[in-house]
Length: 458
Image (cartoon, rainbow, N blue to C red; front, side):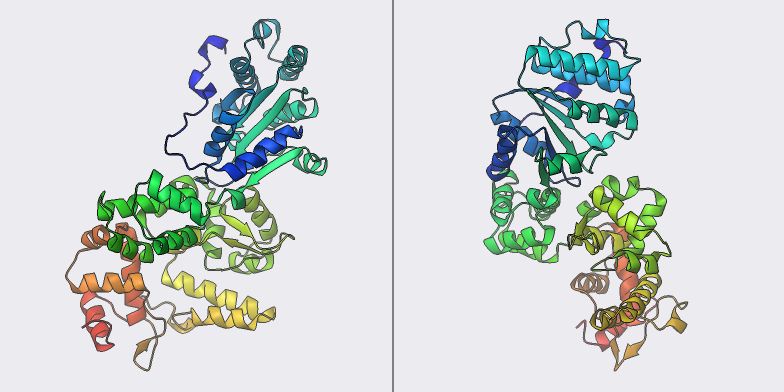
């Protein structure tokens, strides 16, 4: 690959948005890390938490020249990676790498990197080098180059990595030596105040404080979740965003919203290997997870390794302690996962979870999962039926299921229900199946009749 075929857009600093929500508290942390002479800044979080936007805001105020490289799958080739690395540094300081590529045999990448480090040292340039989307790198030959750069870093160079998952670099050693500044998901989540600024200024919605606080809590500060919710509100209410209608949407906003489902499915679940998707699905019913419990639900014996893999990959897994023992999924992510489970699968998983909690002395949690079982084991093969006690469903209908039920009674088709509730048709079908199961019905007519008998419909 010659220098003239490098893709220049990979070297461009992303443009700043005029309606950006400023993150001064995080910018100060990043600036302090560089001022203290730390070698590496790591901004690590799942998709949609504003990693690139934060880095862009910080370097805009930094008093250093910046080299930016947006990585992709093609950069797993060491020669290609090194050429782009040199080009990014040359963008920051034109003195670097002018004749470097002509003099170096890039078939020996480490030799090329040594020459580049020597050149950086000679110029004494004070530079920021940003490697964004570092999770695209899988080749250990490239990781070795970056680790070598960190081990022999010129005094004037500060390295910044934006990634969805922890890279296989000597982070523990850098952390122990106070050479690492870290910004992670917990810090990137929008506060209620930042949520208000984002919804009112960036998304141009007029929402009352209660609705803003509810959205901040429901999305747990996930910026993309807020954006997707705002788009759904705008589509439902129009540009005027009537506050009452918006508040109704916020009250019903959950993981089955079609924007959240589509985003998560495309960005996370569809890209995960099949065994990992199976693990996620079978553990989605849990409000908290540990390795032994996950082993019981999945039939695996390596759940601890899987959980640590999910944590390192920032796959919406939130640690509940510092011992890597207990975790939970982001609430919206868990809800999306649960949508893919049939009623029979949910019952069996709740049954297994109840047994595990009971055997391990967690009686209250065992009872909670037992109450979520909708059919006894001998009825597990009878699709669409549920046991009834005192004429009422074993499990009450959710608010969203009541909405779907009312629209069924109004004669709406699945497509019309999806349009009115802003959910995908597949989600509508799952809600209808749940309604049938809870009411012991096999058709719309039966569901409506039983719902009227129970006083769920007028």
